[in-house]
Length: 299
Image (tube, rainbow, N blue to C red; front, side, top):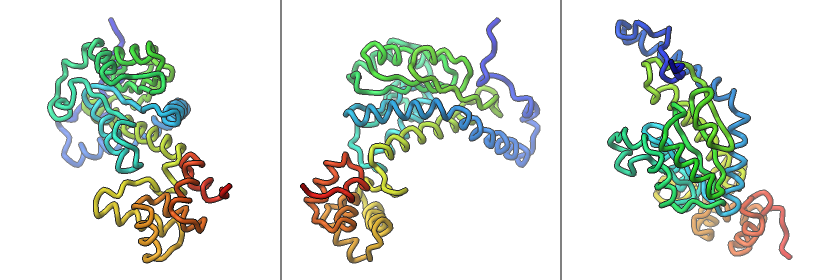
């Protein structure tokens, strides 16, 4: 008899869930959710290794690729979709690959996760290379689709990470770095969109945010590569410039205009007292790191 995985185990604290009042049910869910951050903290060393692989990939022109099925895959797509507006990276630098394709984002296609060949084929179609890092996400830790993808990624020389919510997960053996976050049984048995999904979102947020910060997408704690793609974000760019430099509204707006709405360039212009072309050259020479660009001098 196979041992029941943690994500499929029954929670002894919620055995009478159907008899709980709404207040009791919500309290139980909140109590369980409070366990998630501590579970994530216990795997921070492995998350750090994943970040290092992601930084290496991004610095070498590679991609950060998430692959998963169901809730796990949708969380990867969500994190990938947020990276262009938040960090100014082109679409395609952070990629979410979901079993069943785009349609599965909105309508569950559970059978898609059972095929390792589909996992492989999706990464073949994406053209995975040794410069990329592939993060396979599976709450159960045994999804064939993810295993097929990780095996292909390894075969072509890409870096690999397995993210699961069960100790001793099967997918861990198919990746260089294994992140196994143990949140304990769910409030509703087997419903991994709950604690498992929450922990996966936290970890994916950590990986992408830390990797982007390390590759120059932040100055202090400001999003200096945010894309001013709408009125709200254009206003945010001006606020970021003001926060970073202490400039007044008029000066920040003028710098933003001269920098074509690129906060990084405007910040270097103001703090280094240079024009936009010089600021751009400094940033290019500094690999996009604002602090280095400010301190540099023209040759």
